[in-house]
Length: 243
Image (cartoon, rainbow, N blue to C red; front, side, top):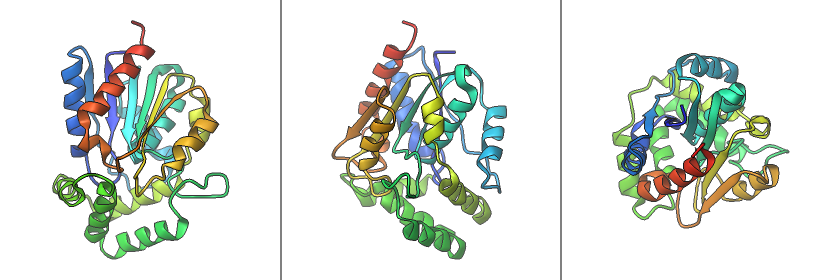
């Protein structure tokens, strides 16, 4: 179904950050079906369990995409499905969210450990901090942060913690290298959660895929310019599709 795109959201903030982009995409192409699927409320941080759940519930033979954690999961699922996935697009999504020896352009491990500890002690305050970091680099960071928090679902602390632990465990480099379908990866130059340098590192890893860097934008760029992002995605879909 080359006219169907499934989008997965990021950690903790629910589907609302993707809604303006989905509406903009459908406004550009009436034949494109865009669906935002909430992340499953799993209590496990095992990537395989998440992928099994997503593979069982999401329709086959579609485009897969996502923002942040959603993009990482879409990447892993695309590789798992292979030819049963039309193509992949990610936004503000790092192959590894936490830095390690083989991937340094990511969040420092101590900073991430602080997030984990904060989530265990005060999940709501941690989500507020996370929303502020998502909005950093945008033109109205406080307004965008409030918008993100207002749309966040009431997730249990255990679900939030499992999602954070999943973020630390996922490493999609091998998945991205093995997936043979078309790929588009968009990064932000002022992202406080995914360093802009990750775009260059990913290009070195995947020299034949499309990678874009939006210079004056933060992690929440899909909310700040949904129509501009939708236009870039539409070009990618049409150039990569059968027509």
